[in-house]
Image (cartoon, rainbow, N blue to C red; front, side, top):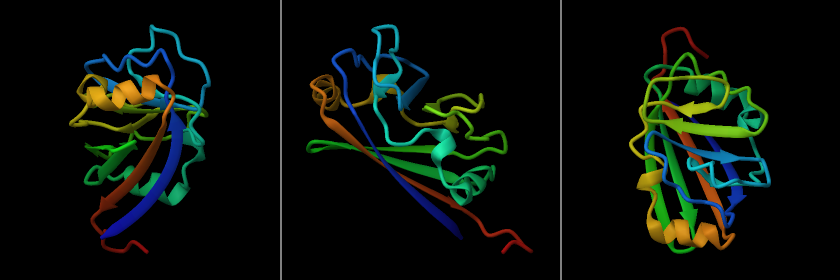
Amino acid sequence: MVREEEYLVAHGHPNVTALHRTTFEITREKELSLAGTCIIAVGADKGAADLDRRFCKALSDPEAVLETTLSCGPHKVRVLSQGDPGLVLTHPTDLVWRKSSFTCGRTIGVYADHTAQNILREMVALLQNGEDLEVSLVVTSPDKPGSE
């Protein structure tokens, strides 16, 4: 079993609404307009392009599972999503989890079991007050014959 981990910290913003039905996003950008209904945290210390290449390689396996744990104050949300060969993770600022199979340079997980609107409203309230969001990313994928 291949296992790679990443960790990042971001923080909330008064304009976090977390109402999007098909995605959620964490960004390095500092500002957020009310139109960004998928964004749950800003000012992240990593974007997609900052992730370790071993982590990215593991995530490109279609059999990979990404477990994302979002922690804010006393609240934790566990999000499961899948890897995909289309996950190139090249965007300098954004990380997006998607309910669909769509991939681009910002996408970190597909077929996610949570979207912005599923985030605990108590957590959203803390994020609206600017609280920190700790994000743990653990990708596991089966060993492939002939892989190192």
